[in-house]
Length: 74
Image (cartoon, rainbow, N blue to C red; front, side, top):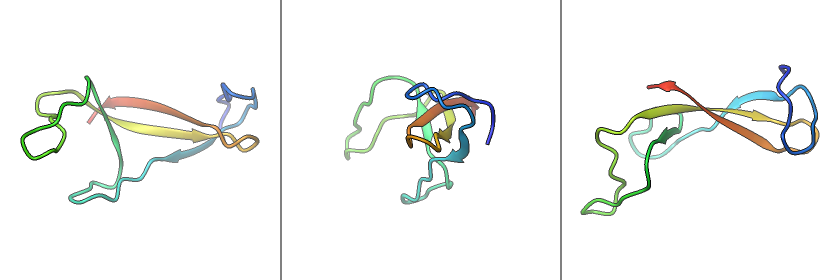
């Protein structure tokens, strides 16, 4: 736990965690990609040349609310 405060209920002491990505060719974590979702020719997301940031997650032990933050570029 840490001293982060839940924006939903105000509880102090959120639990550290992460969002897992188990999709095909996954690196084991989800990423935030800048810009609106655009689909490519075969339906996949266009993401070339866009900044990517790893997602850090915190969970409130009282209400279960998740707080998500995008870290430095990966």
